[in-house]
Amino acid sequence: MNITRRYSRGVKVGDVQIGGGAPIVLQSMTNTDTRDVERTCAQIRALMDAGCDLVRVAAPDMESARALGMIKDNVGVPLIADIHFDYRLALKAIECGADKIRINPGNIGSFDRVKKIVEAAANKGVAMRIGVNAGSLEKKLRKEKGITAEAMLESCLNQVRAIEREGFEDIVLAIKASSIPLTIEANRMLASAVEYPLHLGLTEAGIPGAGSIKSTVAMSILLAEGIGDTIRISLTGDPLNEIRDGLVMLRALGLKPPGLDIISCPTCARSHGDVEALAKRLHTELSGVDTPLKIAVMGCEVNGPGEAREADIGIAFAKNGGGIIFKRGEIVDRTKDIFNSIMDELKGII
Image (cartoon, rainbow, N blue to C red; front, side, top):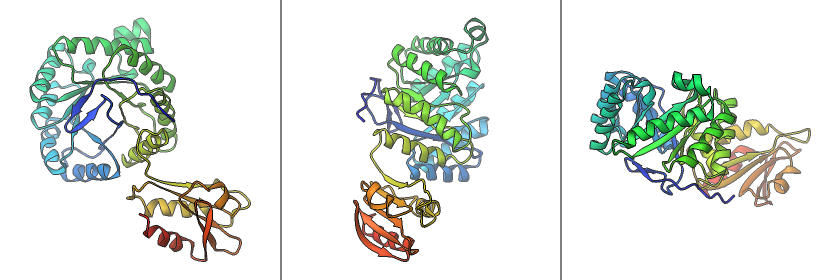
């Protein structure tokens, strides 16, 4: 797939660029108590090891905002401070070294308070993400236009224009809903109205599985149209799932370099072994591997070398309780010890 991406101006977040022709930036957010610096740092490191480019951290109180400085000193990666309601938290987060501030100006209060955040961000060279969610539209817009893409766009543009009047343009925009059609429509409209980089996401998507599918549907449509410069797949639970799903989607669209890809057949009456168990075990054992490699796990010799011919290496269960190992469709070995045999073959590759 050859995707022509929408033009957007580049915005720097620490040493990571969003937009301006840079690769799609993959984000997640910690769900630890930010005041617990040790646990938060451990989660951030795990996210970065999994392929996360930027991490967002909630600062719901002053102690959390102060902790950002200690966290950044310990992880050495760009951090985004997630701020709601109290502009003073944003000022403290900027003072403590946040590389980007995420706000929804609609819940910060008067524009004088937003202006103070803008001034502090400009002085420190800190970027800002302006977020508009369908669930937090201004009452006036909800009454006049309902929860529509038009209302979301108007809300976003009103906030952007006010900030632009202060001479600030290091802005990333996000316009999201829990509805897939509404999210797609609103982002298409926003992409046509501005040149700022766009952050894509689907709010309240849910748990891994159902939430992964909904998020991927929404974002893959927009990304395939060239819309979007940074993404987060928001899922309930362990944020590592967000990075795993995001990488799969971006690689499938050709927007990230290929990495390890374990494919497996859906199984049928021809299967001679537990394909699901073996595939899951390989996923677990190879979770830290990012070598560009396609591994196939197939239930029988019919699906093995033939249907998985594109795999760099694969294994198919055989009638005798063992299996065959194949490379690019050619059988290279027969074995009784399926798992250890495939792992031995991989040792010289990864």
